[in-house]
Length: 578
Image 1 (cartoon, rainbow, N blue to C red):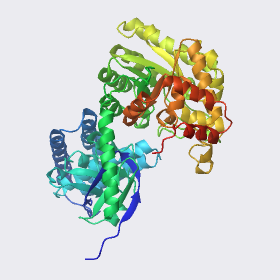
Image 2: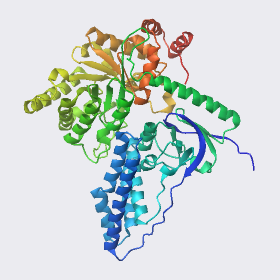
Image 3: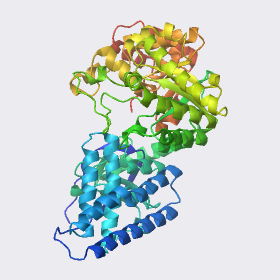
């Protein structure tokens, strides 16, 4: 037999971990469905309804067997049941059947139209939701045609699943023998990625052509953190991966030691390690790692997965669920931050020359006051169930803040008159995002009126350097350690502390292992990061001496370029390479 040559691949690291195992190719069964007309319309309608009923029963069975999944992952399966029984999907399918098409063809065309609508938005989150419709409809079609559906729970040997796309209903069936998966398509926000993180198995998605490059029985070594792997690795490569795996498991065990430890520096400086979330599902992930609080609830995701503006009750239920599950921890809700690269399919954003500098975030809310009030009412009502705070995004002037706060006060007064059980006014803290250089410069004035600041470094860097962070040609200007940026951060922190207010950070910089020592030294009170980074950040801060970092930060502010800062940090052993 010819010797197999190793082949490296790279994709999106969607779930951390390191695994070496044999390939199990999960190839989607090709279903040929004719568009020929049928004669018995009633029989096809019955076939459709029977297929839906059978599919719902199968998903319910998967839910019962999926004992490893947390509540948020089980809710994904509930979403599939909702799709299968969706009255719009049913009506559209039956309308096609009445035109003389088969049940299978009618559902295929209906599902295609629904998924194409989501895919055309270009929004990563909504595009990931399109896979749910595809998954649920494929199951119904197979049941209509009486085809076999693979049961992954019967796998009894160590494998890594390779597929074009791994559907949530597939990942829900994975047992302890599945050591990871690699797919052609997918993203970090897809439900399968969420489930992989819940099951704590590595996943690399969006590889492009991995399915075509492997055969059953091939060996794959994969690193989910780096998003890298090797097909049929040689002995030396296997040895290197085994060492990586040992180091990973050792580090993972160390991190678990920090689950219930206080968030303090080596010399006892207390900080808050919070989590960023965008959904109820993310909140459960934050709870798993015992995040001190929710430093950023990206409320825009409640809007982006809808066909129309979410109702007050829909928003209220999401906030209430998060608060109840994390009580008594604080949850900071950022009001609608839409615009720029985040759009809504049901709202017409007029074409702008510079959408990132235009009609977005608080500017939209202050223009669409009733939409803003609906969100604020939901937040105020939810305050009855836990410790909630409100944060306004993209604030540039004090006038904007005063206008937003006045609308909140109006809403609060109306609701309190009807329901005194909601939180006392003084218990609902109100802050702003510092993500525009002018608001950092005016931080001392803002600090007289707000309860807290949260620095949004993703936009603050973009606006400070006048460089689109999504444009690779100017990526060199995304300088997190530039002294000018550090001075804006220091100015914000000092201004807040003078007025007895606290400062958090919810941008990517808060989880940057090379920036954290400086941020600690600059006096940052709260680090809000992804749930998967909470324990890593807590561990790193526990190893740092706050008073020493104060001196390091002070020195860093004296330099003129990022290169000088990096060189200095290297000289004091504070630059860490992943």
